[in-house]
Amino acid sequence: MRYRVLGRSGLRAGEIGVGCEGFLEKTPEEVREWVDVMEAAGVNCIDLYAPHPDFRSNLGRALRGRREKFILQAHLCTIWKDGQYKRTRDMAEVREGFEDQLRRLETDHVEIAMVHYVDSLADWEQVRTGPVMDYALALKARGTAGCLGLSSHNPQVALAAAESGLIDVLMFSVNPCYDLQPAGEDVEELWAPKNYAAPLVNMDPERQALYETCQRLGVGITVMKAFGGGDLLSGELSPAGRALTDFQCLQYALDRPSVGCVMSGARSLEDLRRSIAFEDAPEEERDYAAALAALPKISWKGHCMYCGHCAPCPKGIEVANVTKFLNLALAQGTVPETVREHYAALAHGAGECVRCGACEKRCPFAVPVMENMARAAELFGR
Image 1: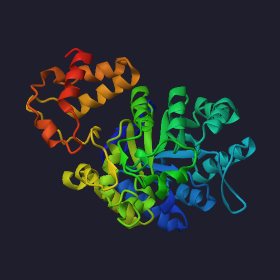
Image 2 (image 1 turned 30 degrees about the vertical axis):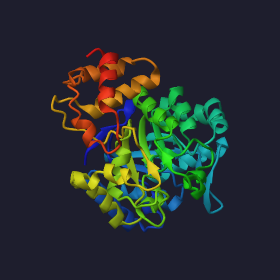
Image 3 (image 1 turned 180 degrees about the vertical axis):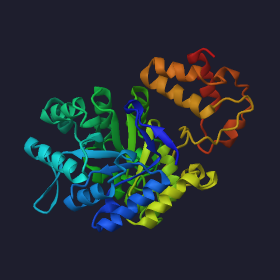
Image 4 (image 1 turned 135 degrees about the vertical axis):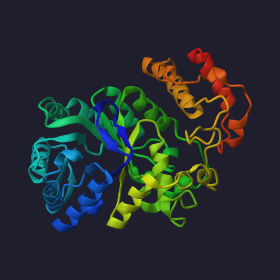
């Protein structure tokens, strides 16, 4: 398992994490088997959005004696009421739900306390200025929560949360189709067929800005919906018009700036083992560039996907990283100190580019690499 640091949280998360879908409606023995498989593979991050009491209790039992090996991404504002899941902002329910979660998980703390499902700017303002955030900050202050997070499908909300300085981790929906859609408050619109009727070109600029801002500010991203609920893996169901593989979807998400961990929505042990197998898969099985370039309804022409197909550079320039730092600086209209330091640490600057064009010939997305290298050299001074 490869590990990544989730931004300023300092948490080292395995690239492959697990959502809680697979734990639901399972016996205590089955849940323990899941955790055994995760522990053996080094999968250490678990998302806990589901409030089902049996799920929480079964997982708590399965974690006995090995709790410290796992990062628990626990959600505030999600409760079990009248036999079903409910999202709430009522503080009595929020407190009761979170305390129930701790009791059933048999722990006195969680690594990430995540405000659950904020998809409108109005809701974000209510959370930011109200008792939910006060409660979350109090949990962090007393060590019950190691850091704070927020889950959202709306890049406008997610960006506002990241820029607020209040959250350390963002749970966001990332896949090659969602990334083309404009911001909105209705998550169902991200998958609506009418929004894919006309050809789509290049990543939505607000989503690009979100990823780059999170990278700059040290907000780690944990990914949900990497497979689009499984639809992206089906040629019949995918709005892109052609199926992608699970490994391609995982690699795509992991290549976005600031992403640290992808929560696999595994519903069976076979699904879980398949996602874990990504870690040992050869590069050609993880490579999504040619697949995305061939999608009939979508185009990323001219947009750098940081896929690395431009390599190797005869001068040793890390073209994808140079382009990422260039985009981070251009998005801010200045060069943040952290970006300047990361660029300075590169062994070879963009100024060493000899304009041989080899990178552009290999790029599946027709990115003007030589032009980007010239801009980076001028901006960073080497």
